[in-house]
Every structure is written in structure tokens, then in C-alpha cells.
Image 1 (cartoon, rainbow, N blue to C red):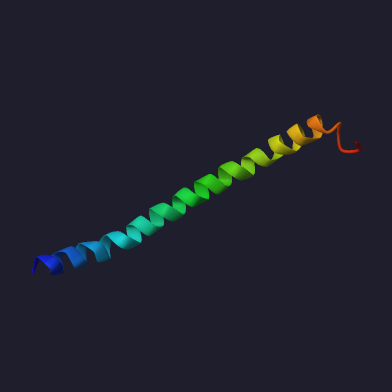
Image 2: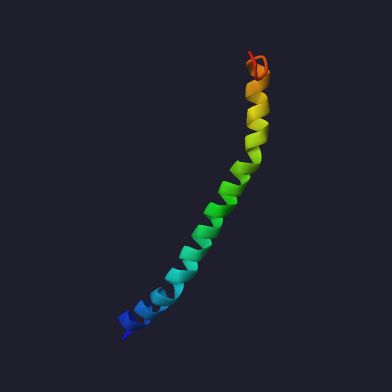
Length: 52
């Protein structure tokens, strides 16, 4: 009986945990995308601009 209750609770929790994990991945990806312009400018500054 206890095993059945645990199985039901896991069946309820797994989709929620997967959704939270996906939201965390999206947040990290969006943060990385926001950094791309800064990375480009730093690269260009270090390498004497776009035309070398």
C-alpha cells in the first residue's frame, strides 16, 4: 500500500519537476543570448575592430 502511494506521488511530481527544469534551461539560455552583444564588443575591442 505504501509503495502504491509513493508511486502515485511520483507520477504527480515528475511532470512538475520536468517543467521546472525546462524553465531553468530557458532562463539560462536567455541570459546567455543577452550576453552575446557584450561578447562581440569585447572581442572586437581586443582584436582592433571588425576590420583588423
